[in-house]
Image (cartoon, rainbow, N blue to C red; front, side, top):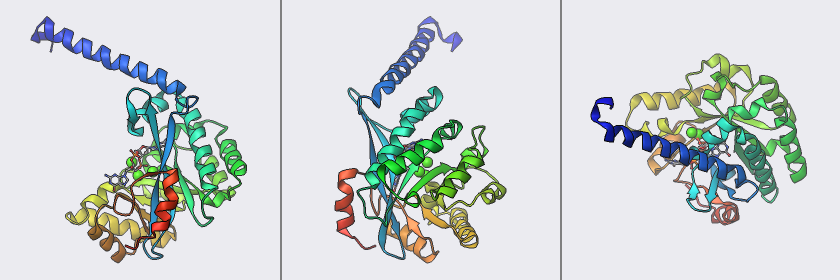
Length: 275
Ligand code: C2E
Ligand code: CA
Ligand code: CA
Ligand code: CA
């Protein structure tokens, strides 16, 4: 780029400045987002293949920006993580998810996504306990989702915190499983409740034998460990059929339900669709 002439260099500098400025502006707005009530949660169902019914919902965060419209968590969660804003945002998420859960039938659970950094704040446990007691929901109805790659990051959640949560009755799912390159030793360290097979394997499994083999062996592993298994990103009836044959417990994905606003949850339950 250096030989490309002054105009080009200035172009790149300008665009870098612009994206840095845009990021700073977004950060400023994000600092105010909780107080301004701009964050909201969508809920995506878990569908139990054998029971043929919805067993709960995963809470997925969105930001309704006053100018830019709805922003995806993949865009603002990294900024929140880098700046520490994730702690306040994460607290809001767990409180809101628990209070929404308190309106649902008692056989449903809610799953909440956590960032690695959140486990390095001593008050996380207290926040979760308070959210549960304020909403008066039983701890076993709350599931914490942590990604497999978190286990081997420098922010690996302290097993003491995860153990305390498990002792409370809160359940813990390993998200994006199969993408984190962690050894099975990590997996066996704690009594996780559930594994969520990453959607990349589900997307490919009907045309790639290696993906199908991974899906089947993850399911076999969960059978041996006597824990639950969810297939993420199920979009077609063919994928669901295959997962039914391979004895998967639950599925999630656009086929059985897209993420919906809290006030659509009851309509979705009433539909009682069979797959
Ligand atoms: P994730 O936890 O792996 O969530 C699954 C993502 O896949 C969601 O994207 C969901 O909308 C999308 N998805 C669900 N079914 C399908 C399908 O059938 N096909 C396809 N192509 N996609 C599907 P979303 O809502 O944009 O969330 C992206 C990521 O942001 C999440 O990935 C999670 O890592 C993170 N995230 C979301 N909410 C929170 C939160 O409250 N806290 C934290 N720390 N992270 C969050
Ligand atoms: Ca998740
Ligand atoms: Ca996932
Ligand atoms: Ca993911």
